[in-house]
Amino acid sequence: MIRKDQNGNVPWAVIIMLLVVTLISTTLFAIKTWDDKQEYKNNVDKIVVAAVDKAKADQNNQLEKAFAEKEKLPNKTYKGPVTYGTITFDYPKTWSAYVDEASTNQPINGYFHPGVIPGLQSTAAYALRVELSNQDYSTVLKQYDTTIKDGSLKAAAYVPPKMAGVANVQPGTKLDGKLDQDTNGSMVIIKVRDKTLKIYSESNDFFNDFNNPILASLTFAP
Image (tube, rainbow, N blue to C red; front, side):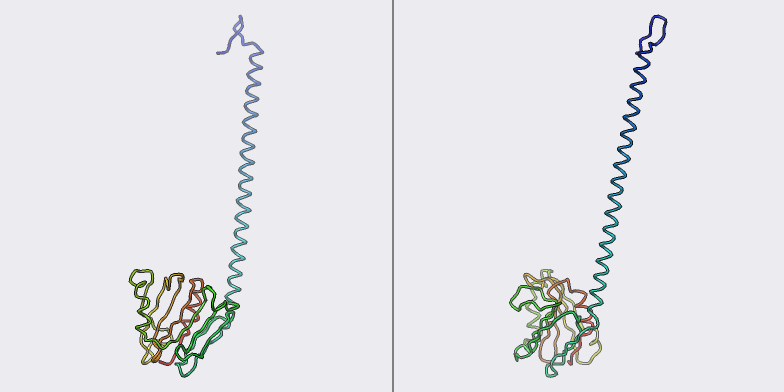
């Protein structure tokens, strides 16, 4: 309640005090509003800078991936011994290969990987493994029964695209998932004459390469 003097007028001191309080309140409000605007502007600037940096990083990643894919071409071709069905497939030219064809029990034992082949005793996940063995097809497939049954490995009938409709080609099996305790990847098991071919990638990082060009170009003499 504002007190008045004996004549019913509000004292000047009170008026001045009210004006001062109003001025201070207005000033404080203006300062706060300005600070809020500055904080918002600074936050917006940071958001814009972060968005621009992310866009640049994404673009660089896309360019690097595109360049890496382009560098893989033209593909190299592996061609196995005629005696063992002339197994043939394409693979990226940026990959190196080590293939042992000297064993009669395992006529083909191949390792393929980008750059340098990791040591054969290493625990590296190879981009591609190729094994042709004397084991019976059903015996090889049976090794994966447990993981197929528990669902950690998915199995489906498979015929390489280029072998579809070729006489005497028997459907094989494509396995995707947990190939063993430490390996998640993709594998094709297929009968080649009296032997069994296992061709597989030990890492899902090479899933696209495994499907194309490798499996897409796989051929053999049944």
